[in-house]
Length: 222
Image (tube, rainbow, N blue to C red; front, side, top):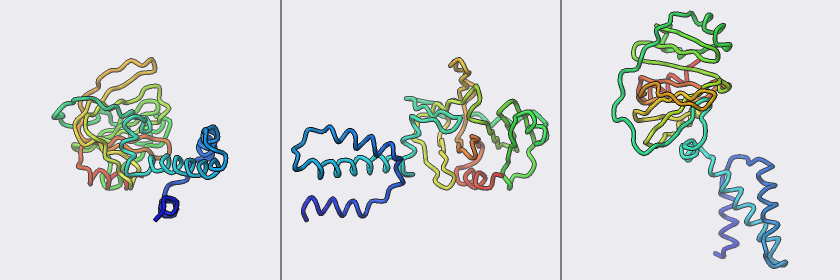
């Protein structure tokens, strides 16, 4: 099979998500400046543009999003890889407040949600753009991405992409750092394995259960 035929087979079999028009235009613009012979220019331009768009689209498909998340924000959480990290984490802290969900909504400015399977939380507290709630050994935090402060998770093991909820599983203990509006960082605590996902503009952190249970609870959060 010739190279042309192999490329045609590859193009027909490749499945990639839709690519933004501005990305396609940018690729074509760059290809147009390549110094190739006139009689090959059109074929070469089409091939290189298609290949680059294919690679760009594939780079954002679920199997490799965990790698992309290593240098991008996950909603209101920034995943920051480090060389080493803690080997253990203390018990998940409970939430000391006793607000009702209605009171928490008024304080936070958005309606908090909870996993259906856990029932009423033991503790609930809130501040502007932020709500935390807990059950026995389980903690769920939810916050809006436009908060003036954000979390930084300093981890040292690979993230695991969770396709069912478009989230990420931090499988090892890691430092949970709070960054204020001025960029100053403060270590809050060492967190255990945590599931992070985003839904309707709200970022969720669920800690205190194994991965399978965390995904199950996240899927039933409403």
